[in-house]
Every structure is written in C-alpha cells, then in structure tokens.
Length: 373
Ligand SMILES: NC(=O)c1ccc[n+]([C@@H]2O[C@H](COP(=O)([O-])OP(=O)(O)OC[C@H]3O[C@@H](n4cnc5c(N)ncnc54)[C@H](O)[C@@H]3O)[C@@H](O)[C@H]2O)c1
Image 1 (cartoon, rainbow, N blue to C red):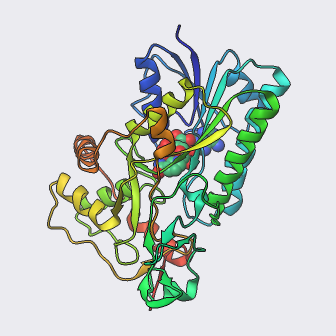
Image 2: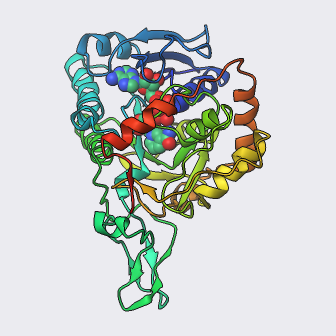
Image 3: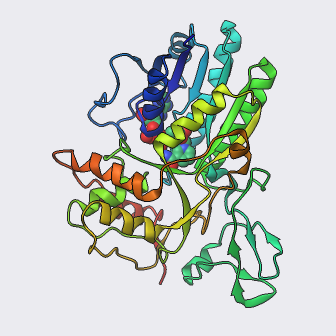
C-alpha cells in the first residue's frame, strides 16, 4: 500500500525529483517548503505537481511542522540553507534548529512516523582521503589561506616536497573535518537526526550527497549550484569564472539518481547510519564545464581562470560508494547524459537571466571569493 510521505524542501532541486518519484510509485506526497526567495523569486515553481499537497512554511516553525507531519509515514528532510555566503548563523539556524524541531514535534505530538531520511552532505568531511606515492593514507586539514594565496592548489607530500598527494575515494568512516558554517550545520543535522531517531526509536538514515545537479536547479540563486551558475552565464554570452586552476575534482551526481537513492534507503532495512551517495567517479571542474558548454552548444567558450579561490573549498573530493552499492543502489546517469538532460531543460526556457553578474562583485567584496596575487 502507498505511504504518506513528507518532503521538506520539496520545491527544490533534489526534493522535487523525489516528489515525482514518490508519486510515480503510488505514494501520497506532502511538500513543506518556504519557497525561499533567493531560490524561488517567482513563488511556486511550475514543477510542483497538482497531485502533491503543498504547505508553504518554515521547517523551524512548530505549528507548520505539526500540520505537515500529521498523518505522515515517511519524512524526507531536504529543506536547508546552503552555500558559502557569510550568513553564518543562518546555516546553523535553518539546518540545525530545523532538524531538531522536526524531532521535537514528533515527540511532543506522539506522531507515529515510520522512518526518516535526512540530507547530509559531502561537505561534512572537509578534505577527503589522499595517499602519498608510498601509499600512506592522509586526511589533510583544509588548505590555509597563505597556501592558496601562493596558488599552491595541491597538497604537497611532506616527505617528498617535489611530489603531491593523490586523491582517493573517501569512505564513510573518514574523519569528519568540514569547517565551513554550512559543513558544520550539515554535520549538526546528521548527528542530531541519527541520535534523536534512536531516542524516539524511529529509524533514521543520513545520506551524504555528492555535488548534485540537474533540471530545476535554481536559475536565480547565484550562490549555489555549479551547473546553473555556469549555464546562466554561458547562455548570456559570458565566460564563467572557474576558481583555482579548474583541475580540482568533485563527484557530480544527477538529481534523479539522488532521488532514487532516497527512496531506496527509505525502503531498505537500514537504520541509524550514514551512507555516501555519489557516482564514485571524480571529474575535474574544467571537464564538467567543457561537457556542459558542449551540451549547451557553446563548445568554444573558454572559461575565465585567474587564480580566484574560496577559503574552505576542498581541493578534491569523490565518494567511495561501496557501502550503498553493497545494498543494491548505484547511480545510473553519466555526466554527459545528465548534462545533456540539463541542457535540454534550460534551453526550453524562453528567457534565462544572469544573476551572477552582480553577485560576483558582492562575493569579492565580502571576501567569499579571493584572488591570489
Ligand atoms: N545540491 C547539492 O549539491 C547538495 C549536496 C549535498 C547536500 N545537499 C543537501 O540536499 C538538500 C536539498 O538540496 P537542493 O540542492 O535540492 O537545494 P535547493 O535549494 O534546490 O532546495 C532546497 C529547498 O528548501 C527550501 N527551504 C530552504 N529553507 C527552508 C526553510 N527554512 N523552511 C522550509 N523550506 C526551506 C527552499 O525553498 C528550496 O526549495 C539540502 O539539505 C542540501 O543541504 C545538496
């Protein structure tokens, strides 16, 4: 029989694909989303299905949560504030308080929720696993400002200063060393959810997402979402800025694959544990950019690479997905396929503005983006 599922943040990128998947599978869906104006400046986005119930409200609001959780079997907690801007307390407030409040309301109201999946992030690791040439393992600290100012993007092997450390896939048992307010807030969210779930005897799973992209990623928020930041500039004849030298790597996951992982763990027996969700394939930011430009039909547009960087960015990160694969989940969309589907979507939109033009000057002024001399 179909379940009743609450998707917080269900108007956003990952949440909206999850909503579609749940409906397809015959479940009833309620969305709780505050339609954050930076992400949804025009209000309700067109992809909210009429079959889903939409509650516009904040995850920190107890009364809104009572209405949202009443009668629900499953909760997928996707709502969050993300990014690198210096709204430091806001990350902790939305992601930490919002998560704790969901559990408070469940306890206070005695709601019989069956299971909860929360959106954690690769950000909680900070830098991941590296090895030296002699195969010693390293989990380096984030690179200090002085190193980045010298444009030394890679980690040197302390024993052989002529060599650099090689990035490896990072497993779940790696140290959790993320230090940005967003990273700390997602770690707070994950730890609270796993612990409070045990306290209430409600199975909880935390999914540590890789960088997720796809159709519906906000075209208006200039502070998050690499694919939309690049695409909105390319479509407006600008050459996007790539930080560092473009050879930093990430694990890029297609949003529909992410949604499938959410439903997969919800339906599994797993409880009170965290899983990496990614492709397990590292790609450089430059190759992501080239593939996107090509898919958009802008293959000759060179990016601007001039030594900009963000303090707190990791150099390399890709997930070791062995743990979730062993249960039977795998991503199925290649980067090329995912970016082609994204391009099809964005090219079908009549007018795409470039919100990044003004934002970039602000990011430099706020020292979020710095330029190495
Ligand atoms: N996209 C990624 O690369 C990525 C990577 C790691 C983790 N995550 C996590 O995945 C989740 C979903 O991310 P996304 O990429 O879909 O982001 P998104 O910005 O597209 O969607 C988030 C949604 O949450 C809503 N929201 C924000 N604050 C809210 C609040 N206080 N109350 C209610 N709703 C609120 C927004 O309006 C938005 O619709 C988040 O928890 C994020 O931290 C995303």
